[in-house]
Length: 356
Ligand code: AMP
Ligand code: TRP
Image (cartoon, rainbow, N blue to C red; front, side, top):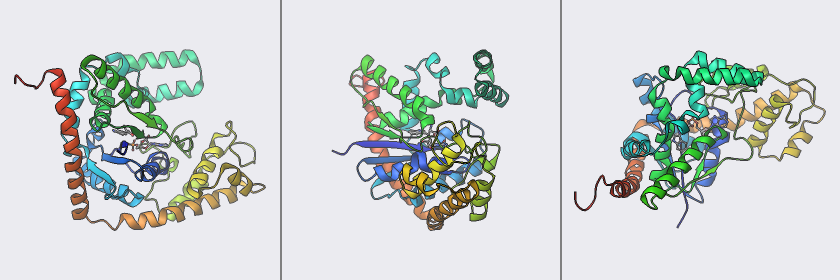
């Protein structure tokens, strides 16, 4: 039997080249070898306020992005999280074995809690001053009261997503590693307390590209929610915008174009170039040997525009009716598996069973 993959992205903001290189690209490659489930996690999206109309539209848009990126509905199952109500049901059961302390340690939660706090914490971390970091983290804890409960329990929903499908492998970017560890802990705890039920999943984090950085501030990851849109290359940006954003991208001191760890800005740009061209790291460095930043950025922009062009054309190919029919078929397939797992969980925990 084929091993199984599960992954997902939130239908919020705009997908960027970091999402593609860190996650989607690998989903496409891995679908050949694995039985794959790719989910549009709309229940995760509402952990932060969303405009309902926009959320509905973005949910369909994300399906067309999955398809245009190369996810083949003949090979993989594409579906909307809320179409399979077992995700919310298993979340409740797992909430009852998850611990406050382990959730409070999740860095994504700490980073997404109220904005002012978040900024203080980021500044403190950037300063590398241990005392400042300690104070900011304590304040983050005190400000608990203002953070949404959904933001706090978000990783349990993610664990439910993964565990429902008896998933072997979860391809994600670096920022999700900690959530994967929590998922494994919850699976092991449930198996220990109630008997073998869940497959304990492994993360798949690519060796290159798992953490694409902001073009404006290489101390941060490229993000959908960056206040500065110049920090991210969105998959649907036009050629002009892409060229301008690369031109404005910050660089490091010095002139060499190489992968040195203490030159994060250039390293990041070169990583994007490497992954889009499929060249080896050495080939990339050799290619730009003796060339200046200006020429490097121009070539990088051209490469990105050419790479995204066919993708952007394909995105327009899908009409709402065909997307909905793919998502409906996907939900039916997903649901049959999810129901089976939830049934086992309910029997093992005494929620359902022979006497009832
Ligand atoms: P999201 O859109 O936040 O649901 O993320 C979808 C996927 O993209 C997840 O697997 C993330 O780990 C991955 N991802 C998000 N930002 C980046 C980034 N800057 N670099 C690499 N991967 C990323
Ligand atoms: N939390 C992930 C993110 O923000 C999205 C996600 C939800 C996910 N459920 C998942 C990723 C299950 C992998 C597996 O990027």
